[in-house]
Length: 249
Image 1 (spheres, rainbow, N blue to C red):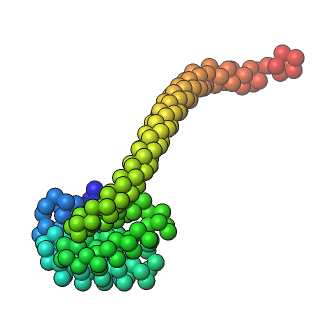
Image 2 (cartoon, rainbow, N blue to C red):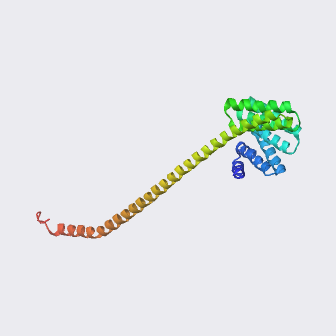
C-alpha cells in the first residue's frame, strides 16, 4: 500500500505525500531485517522532507534513521539523529513524537551503560505520556525502566516497574480490544449500508427497466395509432370536400 501511495504521489509530483509514505515503509523494512533497504528508504524520505521544507516530518524521518543506526549498533550516529529529532519535535510541540524519541534515546543510553541518562529520558517519556495520556508510550517506558533496573541489580525497582508496565499494557490491550470491537461494529454497519445501496440499485434498475418498457409501449401505441388516425383524417378531408351538410359533417 505504501509503495502504491509513493508511485501515485510521484506521478503527480506530490513529494510531501510520497515522503510521508517512505517513513513507515522504511520501518517495515527495518522490522523485516532488511537494514540496507530501510536506510536507503529513510534517506529518500529525509531528502524529500528537506526539499519540501516539511520540518515536522523531517523530525520523524530523523527519528526513523536513528532507529536504523541503533539497529546497526552505530549508537553515536543514532544519538545525533535522536537529538536532532527531539529538538524539531519539541519546537513543533509534537508530544507523541517527543515521547517516542525519549524512549529510543533512553534505550541507546542504556545499551551504552549511561544508566542515569537512560533513566532521565525514560522518566521524561513517562511525564509527557501521563500529561497527554499517550498510553502506548507509557507502558513501553515502564518496560524500559524495568529492564534498566534489572541491569542495575535493583530487584525492588524492577518489580515495581514491571507491575506498572503490566497494568498499563493491560489497559492498552483492553482499549485496543474495544477499538477492534468498534471496528467490527463499524464494519457490520458498512456492510448493511452496502447491502442497502445494492438493494436500492437493484430497485433503481427495475424502475429503469419498467420505464424503458413503458417508453417502448407508448412508442408502439403511438406508431400503431398513427396510421389509422392518418387514414381517418384523410377520409375526413374527402368527406368535407363532397359533403356540405353541416349536421352530416
